Image 1 (cartoon, one colour):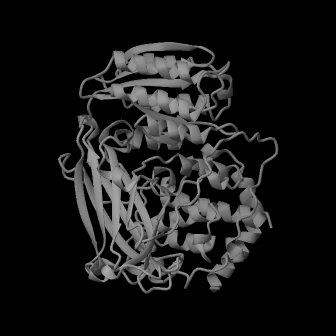
Image 2 (cartoon, one colour; image 1 turned 135 degrees about the vertical axis):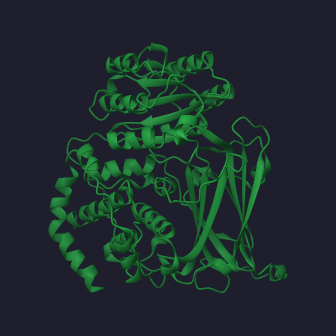
Image 3 (cartoon, rainbow, N blue to C red; image 1 turned 180 degrees about the vertical axis):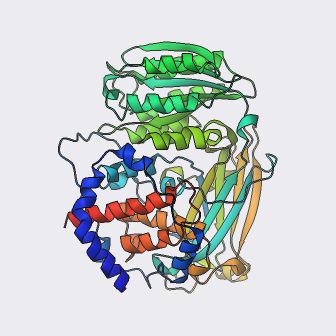
Length: 550
């Protein structure tokens, strides 16, 4: 092991107890004090030193990769609900050459992980959705010039950092971004959970502060209404012009928590209100803010899905902001946002609220493409096997791609979507599945110039018929050395690797937290907002928690 790694390991051992104590401090204060990150020259210097060199092959996990049992702090009630999804499997290209899935722009899993680490715990593996980790970050993809071509698609292929015998295919989509001043008028209904479970400081008080950030971005032509639900539902604020900020903020400040949680009644009233004040060619959206702890009315995911699928036919979208700890119903909130043609964000700090509701307001509110599907066909003459990293609950059938009746994800203005495939080339040592004895020799006639072919299908926000975009991935563009790749490739790979680590994935091989940290530090780039540097800090926290538990 490299001397620098050994030194770092000893240092982390000495500081492990301190890291755990710091992790239990005020979460909001920690995130408000983010570093602005390293400079480009510093990142390039680390890259040139080869610190992120890939392990030679898959193998038994090293001791430094061992994921210790989750630490539960005294007094923390744990009634949180997550969907336990199996990792996407390896597919033989000879049997299943096509991979199809719905895009996902949710980020809730990443910020929820951050909350766990800041509280001095490792998250349960079922709370980790790797695509939401990767999609939390912007990768500086080229921006489309106008809305007639709503996407740019960027690809890059290079060695996989955690497996030197495979390649990583990075696919990046960037949506057209509407300037804030040109954004269509918005008809928003805040649907706020004021039940007894929302009394904690990281629930209703943080929720109120978060919504006020959004109110301060509203304009005269925008409209805001406020609906609350607990045991009963109430229209607290009639639709109010966005420039009447004092009136709206006063209504938010007057909210108090108490009682049971009848989410079904609240959803019905919020949609009814949004439909009554519908703005043609505008943004019509319900923003649900809750911990998801429903205990009156519909609390079953399947029944809520049916309710919201019916409501979305009106043209009103539903986005979800999750709050709090101990009883967070992550599975329900993520699914509700999917059913409502919206997005799910978990708000753990006021800084995160600012990111979602101020910095990314257009992405959060304004849809530029709906029912967006991605399909990748792999060339059997070049690729033997592949696996999609993440998107386990977004998989579609091959025939669903051309079926405009099949629902898929929405992309907001300026949104970034990133997908990663780990692929084993024909003749490499990276394959995991034995080849068929009687395989079809026709693959030998396949084009040797293309590694894969990407298709993106989408509908315009008010469209009924989908449009198709196509992009080849050329063999000639494949890098042989990880050091030849850009920051976006290496950083997204580091984030995905950390997701694998938290899921205790066998696919990660011998890659340790120290290796992941070096890879991330080599690809910080400009990092104006400090989000990448914060990721490195989270890696250090995770390392400290593991060392402290030994």
